[in-house]
Amino acid sequence: MLSRVLVSRAGGCKGGGAFSCAPQIVPVDPTDLRPKPLGMDQPPLPLPLPATRAAGLARLDAFLPRAGRAYAAHRNEDAPGHPAVSGLSPYLRHRLITEAEVLAAVQAHHPTGADKFLAEVWWRTYWKGWLERRPGIWAGYTQGLTAALQRMGGEAGLRADWDAACTGTTGIDGFDHWARELVASGYMHNHARMWFASIWIFTLRLPWELGADFFLRHLIDGDPASNTLSWRWVGGLHTPGKTYLARPDNIARYTDGRFRPTGLATRADPLPMSPHPAPRAMPQGDDIPAGPSVLLITEEDLSPEFLLEAGLNPQAIAVLTAPDARSPLATGTVALDFTARGITDCLHRLATPDAPRFAKTDLAALADWAQAQGAQAVVTPYAPTGPIARLLRDLAPLLHDRGITLHRILRDHDRGAWPHATGGFFKFREAVMG
Image (cartoon, rainbow, N blue to C red; front, side):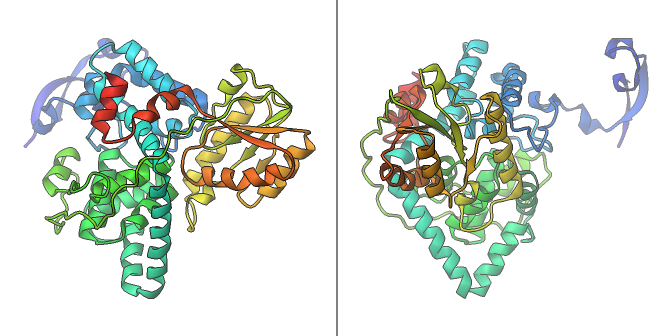
């Protein structure tokens, strides 16, 4: 039933703001009189996001007023256009902007009241540090993925169920929407990622590695640590005995009734697991060398200016770009495009737009290029555990054969936080947030 209420139609006026418009009597649905969520009056996330440092800083500046109470109250709401989230994760994932920059800006704007958002940023650092201390977890994931892909070759039912999940044709309300949204936009709301992973594991009974791979191939903020460990957490493999079960009422609540799936699993028994490996020694990183060097940029850190500020004076710059190394399957075009545009932005900021780009199959050519520059060292920001770190390990002996050393420089943020990523997040949070 519609009511008639007095409203101001500011959007229809020219040459003035809301106060210059005459009020009009228009029909209004009474449900629209409910208080609007604080985050919902913000513009939608402009997907696809521009992959530049300037755009990341602009998003941070625009989000700062909402990083406190508004974010805490509405961060779990998956609304069309994702107006309640920061949209900073793709920039942080590629370090077009850095965690340290975001933390400092939010704390300056909100001396108190922004703990929820600050914790989300620290979760990213925690996941990276936790996996860096236990790289065998990543190796186990890649082995599990290979095994799951091999299973699909001989199990038609598994292949059909996986295909339906990836194409959004399972018939599960909400889940299908999120699958299609991810492929089309390269993005999915964080709360929806948890629901999606839970449905994938406990309702569809698909191998979790295939789901983690689906995310890593398509997300523009797909991070080896955050993605792998979050999927493991949902399945009960990170915190022993603790799983995440997607519930229809929770989904309906936080999607404002858009989705209420039926037939979901009502139990979430933890997946079989082995004990976590003991954390290895904290990586120290290398020092900036004194001799002739070249700078190698990777998608893991597209703000390498900190090396120049620390005294690096490279003779030349090159890029090792390998977003297709994320998976044996094809990486999504949206994710590929964001990474490529981010690299282009980095090179333009460094005034080297024509710097050579080497792919995962070009490691020998990259070593030859460094030798041709007369370099004694290749310097690169530290790449944490994942595909790029593996390629750098493969590159190191090729450089050594040519009398060149590889120097991986660790950021102060990581050096200070990763040593605390030995157990659960809350212990880590106490150490880094106080």
